Image (tube, rainbow, N blue to C red; front, side, top):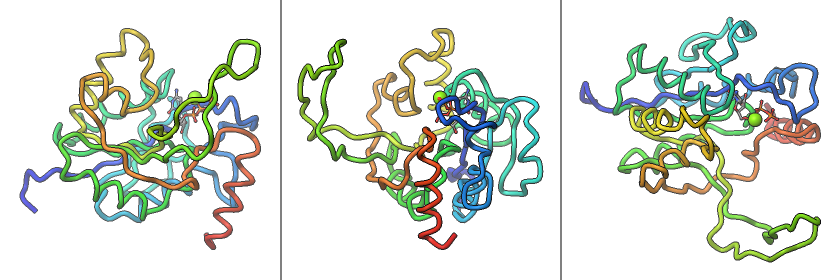
Length: 234
Ligand code: CTP
Ligand code: MG
């Protein structure tokens, strides 16, 4: 590999409070299949040899992952929003040796069902692409628009609709610039990395993911995550 060939880094935002999950501690630390949820996420990334470093962005003062070993590292630079946590993590990566043209795969710590094969598939699809892309899933259900009274306003065409997942893979410098452009507006409208890249006029690649790669969000999601991990013999 040439000395300046782009490397792949992973950045896992892990600094949220998990307010919708109803757990006593932040959801990413709630036990699932015998381990704090995020440890399953980390195990998947640690099994991808092409990823040089995995940076976990935790809240300031959070010492729960202080025992991790290379290629996993922890930076206590989490922010008030997911976008801010990601931007801070990208800044940390740049300050600690990552180049602007290196790739970064941003992945929600709370998506603990991601598999090494899905991560590899995203890298395979994006590493020769000019922009980068994201795992996503074509919408399976009929899509309704709701009115304020809780009734259906319209049935929307779903053929071209996808649900965005993570990881999302972009050039580190381009993603950092794209996110930084929205910091002053509190990252309004920036709900994932791709939306920041889209705002620069670029069109990220949609790479088909799996319904199992869902984000643990609500109380009932923990049992489903546990069942899936159990079915894999984890
Ligand atoms: N996240 C983060 N920093 C924040 C908010 C979120 O690093 N200020 C992380 C979460 O830890 C999670 C990922 O971003 O791994 C996706 O966010 P989400 O599922 O919304 O988690 P929370 O914001 O913690 O949950 P909620 O929205 O229910 O409060
Ligand atoms: Mg949130």
